[in-house]
Image (cartoon, rainbow, N blue to C red):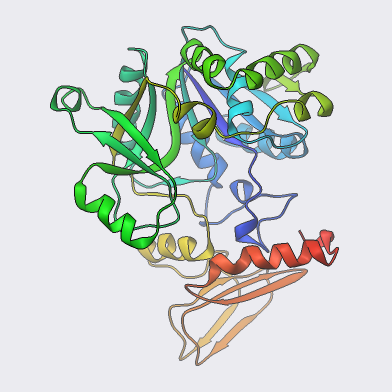
Length: 358
């Protein structure tokens, strides 16, 4: 079985800690291994092979962190000069594999707290994938979330007994009333961005639903520069023009929503996409700590503040429910509950030409 680790995201919603040069998956966000390191460690135990798809600018970081977690293992790296979303990255990886190879696709910037439940879900997903299904992991919704897509399942007892359900439809991010209605039915799950399938099955379905991606990816693969080094099974660098010729699309839009062979594995994993500083707070709160990097902090009559420091003194007086992120060249102060607006800061910096801060 091969695990494809998607590690090309930029993580701009966690600015100013997450930057173009060091996206969130490679940052120390939770006092310990990075999200990328956690992803590798979580999956290496049941993977025969690891393929990491990342931006070529982050190759050295990804290689270093992989070797830190798995010093006796090697991985194959697909190096993208620019992002074209998840479908091209997965396609380039699957083209490297035997058509009968079981594949698990995972993002590198999410966190999963329940490792035992995760392993059970992976086993059920691989079993369904071996039957010819394109499998997605459906997270049992904990509340009416409007920031995630939803999966509608057919609650058939026959397949449910086997650990999976057939998918009826995929739904875009809903408004709150719609999300509440989804949850009330008991048939809807959050779309996690994790998948399992046979490599050949995925490519066959892609040929039917988005053949342009497959054709352009095959051409890009032929033009790729391949190299080998210690600890690296193979580094496959895609030329920029070849990468740009591949239509940009997600696996959801390109394949999953159009295929007639999709199943979902319902699961509860203690999962978060850590897509905002508020999400970081929620995970940190569960562990009973507020400061992420343990900076020199003085807190007087202050509570429920998320403090991320860069070594300078951070002093708080009579404040609560704040997010404070202090880096050498930028300081973010936000009220908890408003951190989704951080993306507006990134947009303004782009407009003002302050690219050195991105």
